[in-house]
Structures are given as structure tokens and as C-alpha cells.
Image (cartoon, rainbow, N blue to C red; front, side):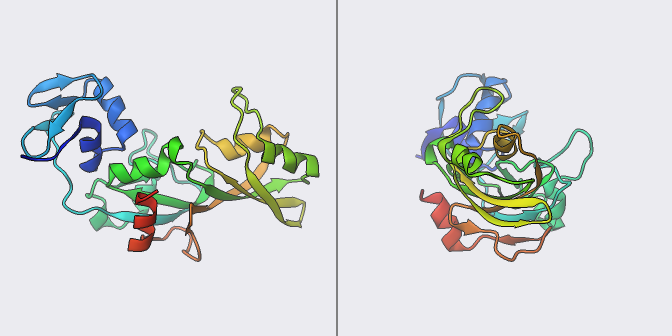
Length: 242
């Protein structure tokens, strides 16, 4: 008898998508088990015994998992494919990895550079991106103009975004001031769309450049812009065992 797991977890194990994306696929009626369309969450399957298809294609658990760190440049979208044919982060991964169902772990917006993780392990993605794990993410923002003590304290207390959401308290410090820009290192654990930019917009500030430096204790380091490397076993184990 094979292992019994929830359907969305199995889809993630197969490297098709993250657990949350798999739940959306199920709700949209794109997933079938043994020929029966499934639209409800919580269905369990037996690995090796039940036949699972996504969009009519049989899926199987990946034999090898890949865990990659990319130093994403500005001008690339954080998706596998883009409807407007813009360059994607997958274009930066060498050809022999493109067919491994690798997808980005979370997002960095088009104008943001820095540390981005990619994998074909949906369960890993769940661990890194789900809000309940409170994964710290550290950014360096080049802010036009100055930042007052009041501005910094508002970030530390949490700010209300344009949609009414109030952010959790952030860790922040000014690292440099030069040429009309203030450089602020900011650590948050949430992952709202364009959250860092919107936090500064709530202060009436504009970010000229934004870079993600680290996720948890996994740091970008001196990885060149546009290049990638495999995560070490220590880094993978740290992120998996949160």
C-alpha cells in the first residue's frame, strides 16, 4: 500500500505547482483522480495506486528535486510563461533544467532584483511562502530623498497599505545616504503583492531601486546578477524544517 496524502500535496510533490496553486487548480475543475473530476478540497489519494491527471495529463512524483537560487535582474517576470512574451526568470536557467517543471518560489516584481528561489518541489514552496511560517525576507531599498525618524518608526510599527491592510512591524535600518538617496534595509515576513514598495508609498516615499538580499538565513551573497546556483543541502534542510 502506498502513502496516503491529500490531493493538493501530491500535485505539489509532482512539481506541477505549489500547494496553494494546486488548490486553485482543483477548484477550477482541472484535476481528475481515476477519471473522476475533483473540485472539492481535502480529497486523499494513494501514491502509486491512484491515477491523477492535471489538464488531462497524468502526473507522477518527480524522481529528482531541484532547489535553485537566482539573482534576478530587473526586466524579468517571475513566472514560467508570460502572456505578453516578456523575458521570464526561467529564461535565465540553463536549457537542461527547463524541462524539469521548475517554477519560482513566490514572486519578485518586474522592477525588483535579487534573491529568488526556484524548485520543482511544491511542498518546499509551501514551507517557504505560506504566511503561517513567518519567513523573514530582507530587502535593500534605495529611497528618493530622506527618511525621518518618524518614517522609520512607522515602518517598525506597521503601516496601512492602500487596500486597508496593516503590515506587521518591520525591522529596518538606514545603511547609507548619498546622491539624494537613502538606503534602507528592511525585513518583513509577509508577502503581499509589491508590499515593500507599497509600504514606502504609504509614507509618501518612492523607491528608485529594490533588491532582495535574503530569505531567512539563506543569503544572496556575491552571486552575480543574472546567474544562479543550486542551494546547498544545509540551505535546503533549513528551509524545509521550519
